[in-house]
Image (cartoon, rainbow, N blue to C red; front, top):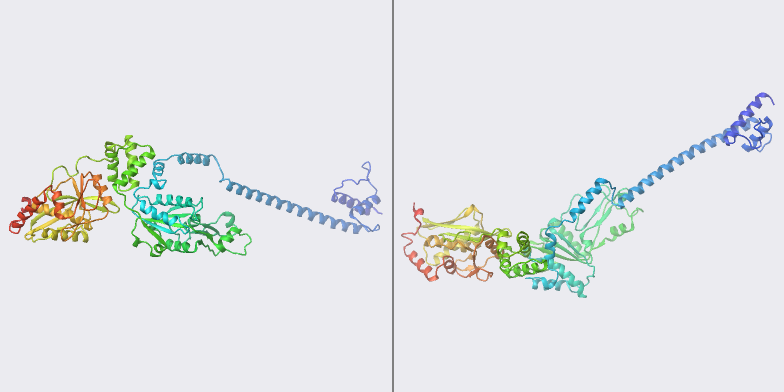
Length: 600
């Protein structure tokens, strides 16, 4: 063995020991250098060379193979370790996000402060709790709607409950009656409503369809992962997320839609389909039934829909003919009555008792006369009590700013009269004036008057002629103070009295307000909106109302004929008024009796 071989053996020996992480062979003693023959033997043992006579070159090749294998393994182990660390971090982050989302989101000092502010504001209440407490809670507390309520009970307290539409003015108790009727149906034992049957309430005027995004709070929506942003865990997998709406929430109970007449026509048609099928179905181009990541409940929703078996109760202030005929054909129709003053007075007194407020009967009578509906009556009661700590007559007048004097003064005036009308859903008072001038026998009203109001004036002129008056040589002009636009037949009685006053120069009481249609034969015909009209007149402080017979109410004088109404408005006996008309009829054509100013 020459020196070159010994050097090669020594180098290979050191490398093999380093490769197998053995800096010194176990049999090496005292740290002394081993002989080349012994080093060669160690090399063969570590490299697993079975051939005892294996040449040195073969051992060097075997070492090179082992060294490459160990290096590759080290690199692979490092890559695996790095990937495992990365996956572990990602898993940790994903788990942390999930826990944060489930716990309500990340919190810090700012978010906690805002949450505290929100909690404080949630505890602040103004009048809503009082109004809620004022709502009737049982059948005995329903006032003025006993008949409609019994009809509603007949629709719900049965093994086969029906859908219902409730008609009536606002504030007459439609919503309260529906809630009480459902509670009674749960206790009845014959209806299919369970003890926990829901009462889902919504407003049809606020329900809208997002035609582009497909969002539908009434029927339900599918939140697609791309355009509408389903929940993160579903959007990441491209899974559309169905979210049922109010129709599913009302399953097994009542879906109450207030102002159903204002609901979008498209929504009404969708609702009809749900009422027929009693289920809501969903569809999405992103739904793939072969996708194993879709949860079972989603598959159930997409393939079978969700149950929506409920009783719909709609409420509206519109007339029946203004509603969808297909919707009406599927519903029983119940009409709620406008509340009379006696009903409103009972509501005020019973509400004051439930809320522990003090109110006198005269004050309750005044509030009933000016409120027009139950909700308004309760609000006025609360306002008066909040300002004065009581609700007697003086406190109510002070809280509402009412003047005890007549709005037109105590002095009667010629040709001037207060006429009651409607402005939208509210009553209003219009002051009508009439003047007589020499002319061609015409009767005209200002250009702000509509066609029906002009016809009412012509009817009044004909009725006056039937009393014996002639309009030859006289023109009558009528005007509304303030230039208000008017239309409708109920101006007729006021116009006839004002024209008669202008012709005869007999003054009209100014503490009186009038409403009524006049026929060609001088009959006073019924008109609508009397509750609102009475409320407007009392709010203005008029002492008495002149209305068609059958109108009812306190401080109301009911009349049937023009002569009867005019005599009362002019504070004259009917015979005295007839005499004045006969005296005027004899000379009106030659010498019309007109004020001096009108002759100038």
